[in-house]
Length: 108
Image 1 (cartoon, rainbow, N blue to C red):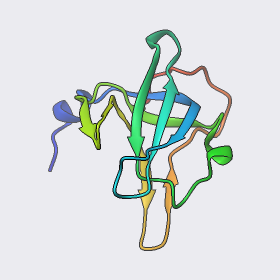
Image 2 (tube, one colour):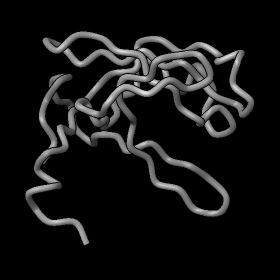
Image 3 (cartoon, helix red, strand yellow):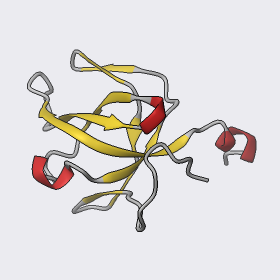
Image 4 (tube, helix red, strand yellow):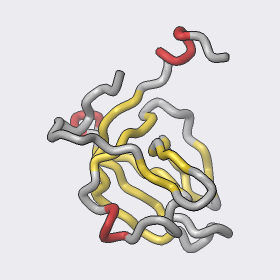
């Protein structure tokens, strides 16, 4: 189990997807996604969601991301965060917000 103190270390924020490119060097179907976190700025994340979302479906979507995740190189691209998603045996669903809220807002 994870203690509350460990959970509190995660910085979850609302981000808007403002760019989506195919990650050509990845072995699996992936996108390079540009997230706008408002005052925090923009960052690139690599996401294995290409089989579940088209580029057009993603652009403009507000998602929940881990903003303070240690960067990781994925198939030659530095990924600076992670979008949260739910998955089962047949699909992946990005976690989104259900009302209008400012990008960069903290998730608690």
